[in-house]
Image 1: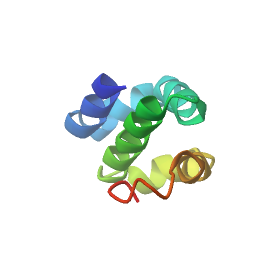
Image 2: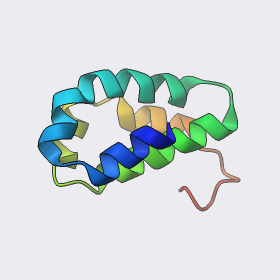
Image 3: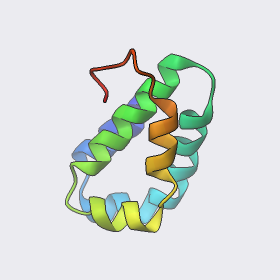
Image 4: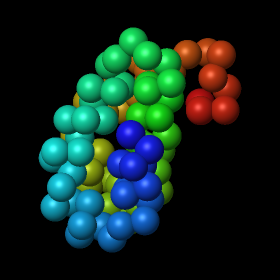
Length: 81
């Protein structure tokens, strides 16, 4: 998940879009898992995604991403919220 986060943060929009369908499956599975540290990394990854130039296009293409992030967050994680 850390590697995916770095890919999203540093690669170009076109490179991300080419592989995002595959990346999305991994992100979704981490957001749904029960391991807090993996959920946290997935939330950080989605946050990095929202900082890219194509964030709106990607979020519209994968509308379930935001609800999964909201479900993955807990109130104790003020820094992520």
